[in-house]
Image (cartoon, rainbow, N blue to C red; front, side, top):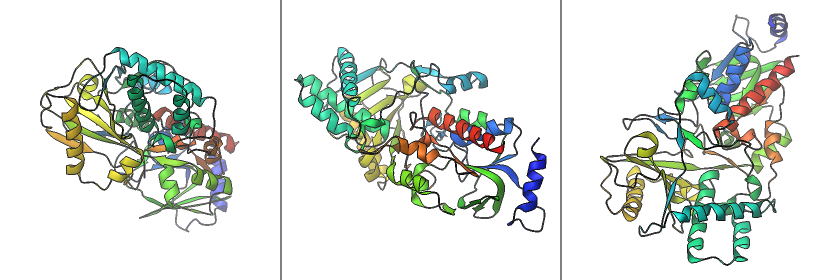
Length: 437
């Protein structure tokens, strides 16, 4: 159907060499979920698509590691609000097993004293009240709005403790401290239901999407030349050529300038790149011979004052069936610790675990992520700083034929999620398809 159009295009492409070389319909930069989503949709429509991925694996910021003897998701871990979520349907199509995360928390004070279980219900009520205050503001930081609202309310000593978990939750959700994130960052994702995890790893999603695709690993993109006659994408060892391209580079990579666009992207997209920020959420995984923590809970909250530092802990035994704990570092504290050695990180995590659980035994193994230092991500996911407009995301996503843009940072209401990345890839693919006429 498009063969005649392509032949006509090849005849006028000025930068093609004399020797025969394949010209693709579409080149997709990035084999993360957004890139694979776009490529699979377009391949199904009959386009000739090649995916260029810098890493030697699929998935991007979805990464299932098996070095500890069982699958651990070191990037994305959850399908958030699984009812109606497109990833839930995709799992059903692919026969991928998921498990409900019942979101049951034990809230623990510094020193290891656990609050009563009814504190979890009180925390939910407090969180809902604070979020309603967010709806009344638009440009201020989460910390500023929450602190001002809480100052007008008489809090019990326990409620004051619980506000710490609210702030820890903000830091984990956005990869940034609450004073660095706008209240406008909170959006209704549009789905319902409980979160789900992958007993055999999130990377199954990437594998399923890539099953019929031409994916080229180890292709580190250096330059994107684009214009009315097509696209040249220069990697370290070769130049790829196509009529169009979909760019799914993470926001942090786009901001770093490690990929040069020639000509430069338009001013609105440059402004979006300056206005949005890249957050950081790193994971520390410790495994043990046997679980010494209460198995009735899937999560533990460390109600410490130092927001972003190991404030939330996931029970891997309960979620995945393996004795381990997953701890989170978020925002500025996570960036500061990227230069730490594994031994330092392990020691900090162990001190906390020992303070929270009196029967703690030494860890058998340890694993830490450093998404900020990763040159192919330069952070975990995007967030909106105070004063910035959510429209920056749609401006970043604005097509500039022959270039189209996808990735979690381009989704206005579902950023920082895997399903947001997936939907952005489908959106960019549809925009490209419409542009072909």
